[in-house]
Image (cartoon, rainbow, N blue to C red; front, side, top):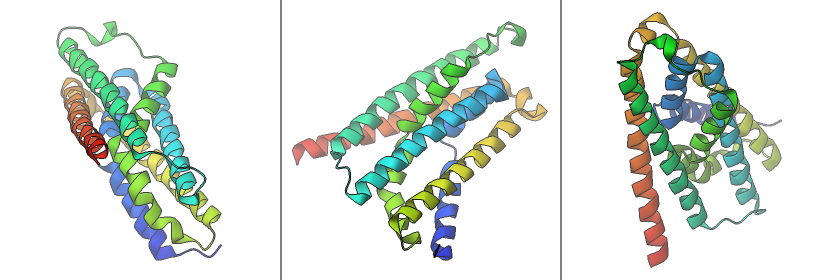
Length: 214
């Protein structure tokens, strides 16, 4: 396969920065790892990764001409995602408040199915990921001479970096120094989720308004 290595490296670094930068996915993974354990956190990470694969597939279909999506539909998906992220943030804030009064042994464990679903819904509605796959992903589709090879390579690189980075966050969140400040980290993670949700909601609603005005 004839691959433009410089372009692929630029893409890999872009993905690394995007995934590693604290956002709704990282906040959710860290909070889940600390409060429900690494297994639940990994299930959540797989859910967010599945959402990324779906967004990548949609981007590929749009680039190939096999799918034409109304931009307003994408913004509505982002709106719904932001509402769900805000709901998770409020749950996290309530949990952080309860952690000050409830002993750790009395806290109920999370469920695996819920972790997958939460991860997928946060990932599919994450404004950062939507913007990347719709606007930024196409800039690297020429990494190989064949469109199919490029799409497959870019998707595999995303999956690998995404899982490695989220795995590192899960590991760090389970360390002693992190667990010592469990309530503070849960609070900060929830505030990050809420901030991203509000900013994403404002952005998406403004874009919908502009689309209607046009």
